[in-house]
Amino acid sequence: MDLGRWIIGGSLRPCALLSLASVRSVHPDRLKLQCAFPLELQSSRHRDLGPVPTNNLKLPLADLHLLSNFVHNIAKMEILLGITGKDFTLIAASKAAMRGATILKASDDKTRHLNKHTLMAYSGEAGDTVQFAEYIQANAQLYSMRNESDLSPSALANFVRGELATSLRSRKPYNVNLLLGGVDPITHKPSLYWLDYLAALAPLPYAAHGYAQYYCLSILDKHHHPDITLGQGIKLLTLCTDELKRRLPVDFKGMTVKAVTKDGIVDIEFNDDKVVKSA
Amino acid sequence: MSGIFAINGGACVAMVGKDCVAIACDLRLGLQALTVSNNFPKIFQYGDVFLGLTGLATDVSTVSDLFRYKVNMYRLREERDIAPRTFANLVSSTLYEKRFGPYFVGPVVAGLDPKTGEPFICGFDSIGCIDFAKDFIVSGTATDQLFGMCESLWEPDMTPDQLFETISQSLLNAVDRDALSGWGAHVYIIEKDKVTKRLLKGRQD
Image (cartoon, rainbow over all chains, first blue to last red; front, side, top):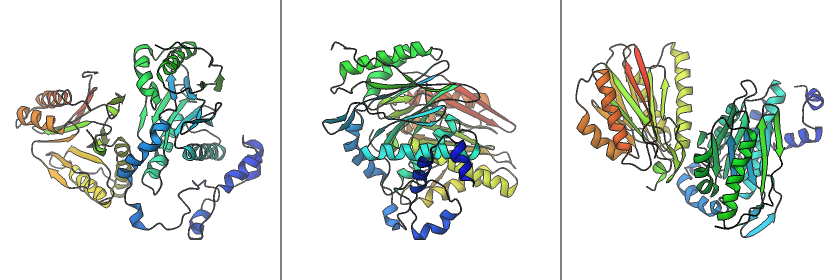
């Protein structure tokens, strides 16, 4: 494969490509297999551990569900919102990076661009989120470079689901909730995919993760319409964040808001300083 | 209400009529008591065979994708569609492969024998034990309610129209007594050379 051409022509900087390649660390047993696809991106966490004793592979799902309750209560405080409209998909994520009772950062961006017209927002266990999101991002970009065409949002959603579902039955599954928003590059149809840490996938007109679900879904049920404009979408989002400010026990430090349209992904200016009186 | 099979909710039922079979499912996807989607179909078509999958949503998707792959490979190898009975055995052996770490699904198979036109339905547990039936098969969180409805409404040798009415009433009235399933339904009526798919709106609460 002619790497040089991609480095010049592709959207990745050379140093980024180098770091992609170094994600792969080869276990001697797997060396033969990996040579077939020299640049196949590997999740560095559970492949390459060498042969795993088979009894360890016995399903951890039952335990996982209990275990994840612990991590999940923190993750549930993280807000992910998604709204589709006539020709756009809005994705919003809270800016607070939390650890226990502490807010470590008030300007966290819990989203990754997968390609020109697909955006992924994530919440969940601290290390897993970014690790998984960047693994997906790298593979989406690798596909775009190899094929000179992007995967559609639905194709990406199913790819992500496959990866998460494989991980679910592994020794240490990723604990990540996702929203995938996009606009189809050909049909210009907006779409939104809801994906939880169990890898259940649902295409939805509007979606939320964590505690935000309990507050926002009913508001969206009442006010959402598939034909809304971007302006109306942002108003709807404000309605949701107002309610969250009113009812959530923590300060989530405002939202990073991005919109996907047929022209690409744009950052949306969102007023985080609005004070909402408590009920 | 607790347990892996009941996290996402959902119900499925298959019935035999005279020279026809029917299979129906609800459309809910939930997280415990919270409904996430009211458009999550649980019936999948592989050639002329139909597979209904209830249980853990992630495994519903995983297993349906897996069988799409397996049936496509079968079709390429054999140069013909898979028969319902053969598919049932494929489902059984595939599930038992994961005996000690199962897929958390309750599959239901429905179809007509391609040679004789004889109706065929069967159900499975999550590790592939086949339950053959001459009348009806139920699966999902509304299993108890569906058994009651089917037991009282089903009768032998129903026409396709009668079968549609029976299976629809059975499913709709069963899921209305189950908090974890409902929110609309898909109903397939399978005849010798015609398959009719109907969408039932159902109660949206």
